Image (cartoon, rainbow, N blue to C red; front, side):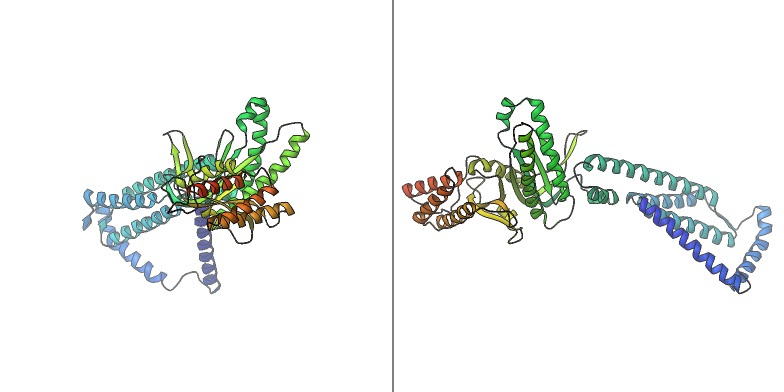
Length: 439
């Protein structure tokens, strides 16, 4: 709205300057009168002389009726209302300028035809409606901007909020289906901590953790959705059009993990317990918009994409991992950017399609010890053999992976599954997927 007013002001100054330059040019030539001024003055003078008697006697060839004037007034109101519906100040200004010019032209033409046109009545009505609609748009825009600021000021970057304020029509508060990436983060063992750590201290730890997480989410162009006790939810690609929203989400999760390590060292020095986090990330279509009661709303997302992201976060506990992503997220990551491994194939429901889930255990810049390298390479080879139903090779490889990390839940789960398949036989339509109890 402010930009529109500035634009109108600039146009006004520019046109005034151009007219001044033209007048100065004509004055340099000895006169400010153009060749077209004299015929216009002659016509005006003749019209005044011819109409003088009629004006004195208040006699006209035609006097506009009340119905005709009312019809023009209805037309003016419809044009102004149509312009105001768009909620664009500059559109209303343009419509107002065109109507004002039209009223002047019609009044002049009617005067030349000895016809009495109600210019004062219609002009005053036009001016009243124009000012009222302008004030209404300004008030509505101010309320809309205030609502946007309250809704997003602490949840998104200032750049994103400024863009929404400049073009609020981009924000579909009623709800829209959008492709985005959802992230869930949860504190490990929070229930046990509440029984061991004073709540005031635990609250301070959570505040420190969530403050750092919020900063990272916003820096990566994400939207902070909500805090649910010890759980944190965010979306990427919700407000800002970003084709790499999946990559941004994974990058943010890794940054959070690194920042958490710094916080853990800080808490240890202070004699405080350390918090750990698990992350689940999924990409897909979700319904984005305002949800809640009539007076209490929350801008959030709904859908299976959100549900599966939450399930992935819970699956970390089953597999002993800290960052799991879905197949749809993995396919949108740039190659050779993150260190990932195909962890397992799962089904959200028994009748659902199998979905690959991946662990992200760093990026290429992350240091990886020889034991880590040996473990992940062995596990990937073991899982490939498992999918090919080469259970003997898979069992050997998973055992080697356990030799690197004896308490690795993922290798133990696959070894138990292989034992069951060998004992009971492979199902006819086996695709390597299971439905974990934690889903």
